[in-house]
Amino acid sequence: MSEPRDESRMEFLLGLRRRGINDASVLRAMEEVPRDKFVGSEFMEGAYADQALPIACGQTISQPYIVAYMTEQLDVKPHHRVLEVGTGSGYQAAVLSHLAKEVITVERYRTLADSARTRLETLGFQNVTVLVGDGLSGVPAHAPYDRIIVTAAAENVPQELTNELADNGVMILPVGPHSGAQRLVKIRKEGTELNQTNLIWVRFVPLLPGQAREL
Ligand code: SAH
Image (tube, rainbow, N blue to C red; front, side):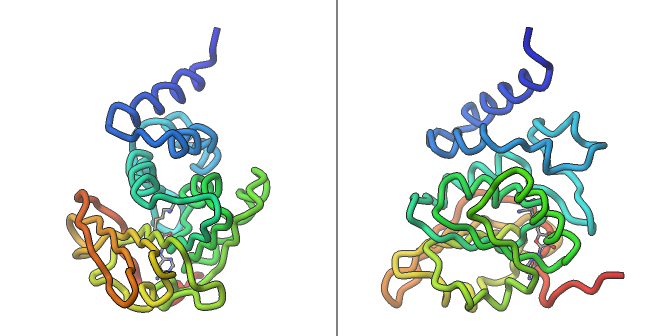
């Protein structure tokens, strides 16, 4: 007989398929990353439900469907170097690490960055680098990136990030007001042109400037 946890993990994958995620490599990555290890022990029971959950510093781990959707839209190839802005728990970075050559992820809260780094190391994710800093001003030390994913809502598309996209690079980010719904936007860089496609409506915590001040 299988554990309830196995059943909820199976239901988790079926739910993603039902909602239209069909890229096999994305589904495999979602299957392989244990979301229960990225949430606090008080939320472990609901780790495989399709819901965002609170993490430290007043932030959230995104809803699994949105993680899978953004990952699928990002179209990550095995030779890609990916930048994530907004490490949070490290969950999205872990999913990306299965698909990309290298993942650089930046978080403005040192507390979150440190715990995500420890968690990813403990779980054996070796191609992820967690940095503390303000992703809004870009991460030039490792640029350019084949793919950029922003997991907090920007009021406008940050030019510092589009500047760091490689030619034919793709960036996905939620754009819109900090309170209310935002539009997920996909930007492809072709030569000097940026081509934008609007995707689904989403609700993310705000992308804020500067490294966070912590007590
Ligand atoms: N991807 C995360 C969820 C992130 S929630 C996960 O899988 O768990 C959004 C995160 O973006 C928060 O942790 C927030 O602190 C961070 N953030 C907001 N503005 C930022 C900025 N300018 N630079 C880096 N991180 C930022």
